[in-house]
Amino acid sequence: MMRHTEAREVLDQFVKRRYINTIFVEYNIMGFLDNNGLVARITYLNVLYGLMTLLSSLVAASLNAPFGADDEARYKQCQLGGVDAQTADGCLALNADSDEETQNETLFAIALSAAILNGILFAWSFLNHGFQEIGVPESERTGCGTALHTRLEGVFSLVNIGLFAGLVGWFNLTEFADDAAYEANLENNIFYSDYNLRTVALIGLIGGVLDFVGFQTLNMLVFKGRCDVK
Image (spheres, rainbow, N blue to C red):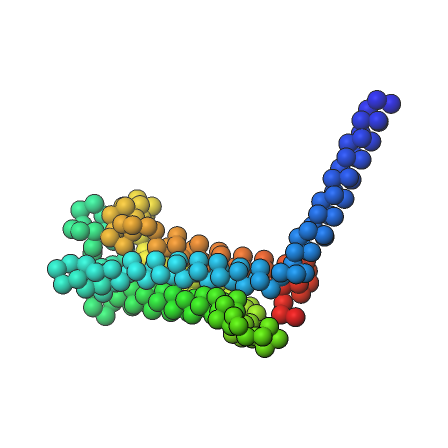
């Protein structure tokens, strides 16, 4: 009887806690979104696009950093692989019209495109708050195309996934004889002297996938339009 009573008490506590948590979500979180859902969504986009701009800019900046006596961009002079402790200045000379040259140029073009795109999207999402429309009657405010922005959000997410997947894919084209060669290159290559470019690109890819799958799923199944333009 004692065990039965204890089990019953544990079950009752579980049901009460679950009921309380459900009430909290329904009346606090969902209540907040009912009144502030669009503002929360725009703020989320500010953070998302700001992060994507930062990540892509880090890749582009490292590739384009000046190197050597003439301060020419790294990606025009050095290979992403093949470097070890004996390589002078951590830069293995890039051969003209080689696969490595194509790899470097493509990576820089993708990183720069991602930085520009996300920079524009960040500025647009900031304007969606409507700060520039202070003084305009609320009924006449447009939020600088907020409705259009939210409708195209999924498209922008897919574009970001494509861009960062492209970065990861092109970084992975660098070939190494074995794990030791990979580690030596990572420790000595000038491209990786500040941070791991491939890891930065991978973070962007993972973030893009989580954004697209996570937000779209939550918006449809949980938020149910609370974060959409009314």
